[in-house]
Image (tube, rainbow, N blue to C red; front, side, top):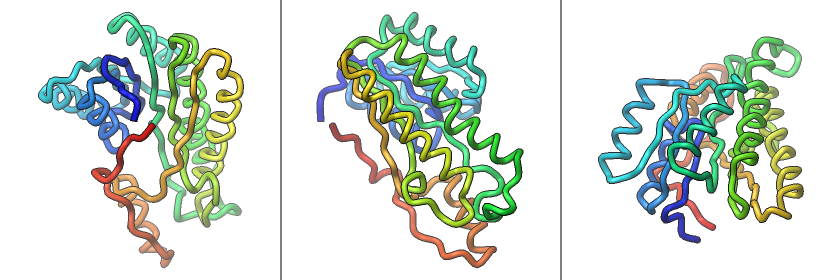
Length: 222
């Protein structure tokens, strides 16, 4: 993989699950990380753990649905480290209707919540990051296999992740002149508390489930 030594990387959802594992891995390879998360307790713990392994970290309590908070986080990241080289937009929700309600039952409330966090908020983050990022930088947006294939009783989640793929493709075409790479990853089921809760809901509804990949098996490749 290309070196991330000395690079400044901003990560949403960085206090737990995939976001935290990403932050730790990048930090272990010499990157400086700015982690944002809505959960203050986990954010404090995550920052302390990264510092304990010698990493440089900036933490920011963030509700990604708040555009002004997003813009403030990115600006403060640049102020703290002096630049922004890359970002990983990981923050996501699955919603309360996932694995329970089909396309004929999904609530407006859950649709708006899931699309708001997973797609609109990611747009806020990507836009702010691109406005502050150095030419030659890189952004990785976390989509999902569900955004490509779809799955029963995942309408809001799958639609939001398909939107992430489209948003990423557009940005990639637009940012080429600046040498900024914008990519999406579409992981399958991954063993996290969020995934395990969904598995439990699936099981109680008689829906076939699949085994998730352990976070410790995830690596970063160029």
